[in-house]
Image (cartoon, rainbow, N blue to C red; front, side, top):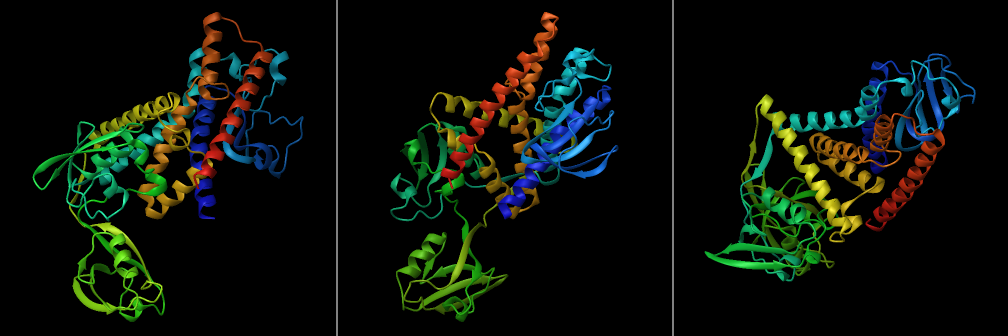
Length: 451
């Protein structure tokens, strides 16, 4: 239910922002907007000044006389604004055999048409700019001041590719890394589709580590395989009646050591506990400012009854920016994400990256929306901004049904000074819709496979 709710909230916000751009631009240019729809297909319910609130479809011969019908439709994977005198997702062609009216899209100038067509994309960009500006101005960018690897468990993936606890990572494929954020970007984003050549400082000596790309886990699905030095293990929950509860361990406690072994990873805790069933283990915990020592005896199943997580306790600085500088940084963020999007798309086309790892659909969006919302409103807003930017980039593509497709059509009509026949426009729209639905089905299929 969390996935469904957050997916609905995310898509609802993005679609409303996008379609409101088209709607407001159309009104400013003196065009009639007959329908403002969230979703596609059958009308579930809606409101207009002529009929008020009604359930179901309106009569086929309904004429709003310039009043917009605001509606919610059955398929919640988008939305549209039906602008009078325009061939769009509604496939309405009743106007084709009539003289152009002053309030119709087709009777307006090229610049007005461009403004209306691109207004949705502009609104999505504005949303991204606003969120990125707010993030830079109010919070700043986190800088985790370390590139030193923490605990590396024996026989783990990190161990098998050559990492050791205490390695300080200097470069990834020739790029210097000065913070853990730099490292994450180089490992999972900037080098996507490439093998990795990593240089580390190991006890004063430089060592080279080569890793085949297929050995790097998918960040979202499997989690990171490296943790920074400074990670501590904390208790999320304690099972009632468990050895941990009997030992006085509480939610929020930080487990410093167990069985005389200092902890820097939950894997260490799991290994020590599971290998000592029935044996008393001394446990040192930190509770707020106090350090407490206790003991617990793992059950015969090798557990003590705690749900644990990891948190970083090293130095994290936030680099903040001024009011106007934050706008510049927001522009930089958008430029970097745009460049990354096209770079990843290129790698997908040439076969360097799997399609399913680069693109996600409704299921992936629902997962990420729920995860970011659980972290906090800031993370959710940042995710929303990234998604809004992605929606803008996709929509401006010169593909039928999308805004970029409409823009290409009106540009061609202006160049050749004649309108493309309505039948051809409908055929283009139908073809684009079929291709788009097939692509969406493929993306959803990939989403389900990745669960």
